[in-house]
Image 1 (cartoon, rainbow, N blue to C red):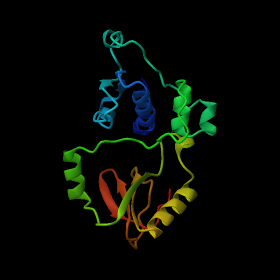
Image 2: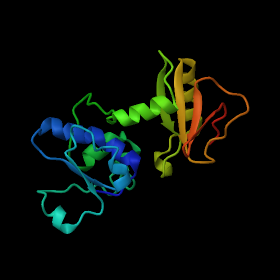
Image 3: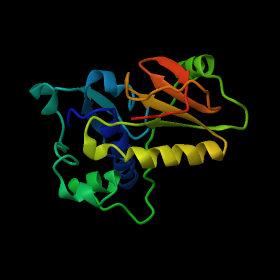
Image 4: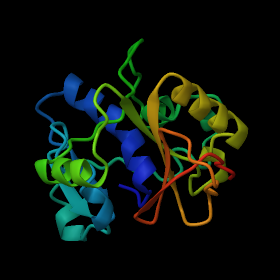
Amino acid sequence: GRTGGLGDLRLLTPVLREIKRRWPTVRIAVACIKELGQSIQNLPFVDEVLQYPVPVSTANAYDGWIWLENAIERNPDAKTLHSVDCVAKFIGLDLPEGADKRQAYVVTEKERGWVNYAWPRIPGIRRICIQIKASAQCRTYDPAKTRQVMAKLLQENWEVFVLASPGEARPSKEPVPGLRIISDGTSAWTADVGF
């Protein structure tokens, strides 16, 4: 358990998947803030999502707990290891060479319907979302490099959605096909992602 944010849960999913792969009969429950639990509730390797904080009576029903506090923030390994490897090492799990470190999310039919209505797909165009700023500076990728990555993706005909808090990304006057800012539920075409 830990009260981390959405990114922490996303980066935990490859580790949970590996635990379930190795020990398929283990029952995995994840304690997190209620609003974030929906992001993992449909994963086939997560058996239960518990609302944090967990009452002692509920906690006592489990054989063991893994606490992830400071698995990244105050962990010196976070300076040199991929976040997934860092969390795995923190809990004493060695990931196999070439382990799948992709974050997992199961899209529900309701979500699929909403996104197809709000942002219809362009046939044949791949789509990616990039969160430009994390809650901690140590987890925010260099802005200049992020812009280079986005430019390369656009050049290779990707549709790039920039996820930002209000004021983090500045829309430009001239639209760039395929590049959008999504901020606080609103969308704008943009060319200048200045953060």
